Image (cartoon, rainbow, N blue to C red; front, side):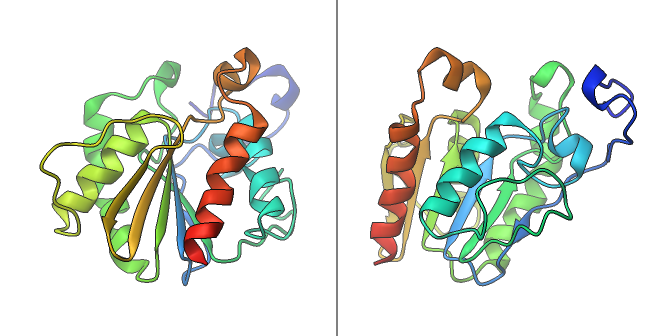
Length: 200
């Protein structure tokens, strides 16, 4: 995917490797996205950095006190996350932006490790149905969750996993969702407002 560049970035080198999660190791909020955008994180090497989805995400994180700035353009732009960690189900940009089950399965151990290592997490925000389903499956696989019936995805849906952990679902801030109005800024911000309330 790193060889297929768009014109505006044609003179720049793309990262073109698996993109790791990043943020505050003591975070109480974990954000789970889908995959690096072909010309965003796949180019810059940092999740939600250098694309339109990131513009939405970091503006909301800044507004609710989880980051020190409201934009993220490159890995050396000074961005710092506070009480927040960002990761994704898939670590490489999928061809045609359509992840295959095999890709999800190959990357699964990384998400499991992050959930295990981030011991203070109290709220997980899943950006999209695939991240929501995989977050719940990961929590189940780790023995953290046990559902009689798998919760359904819907924007703003809250799943109380146990006394100390809640999963909040959100539509992904993709251009497809934001340009069509399926996801509005007030809708997106309500998710982070909810997370802040849950943290007390």
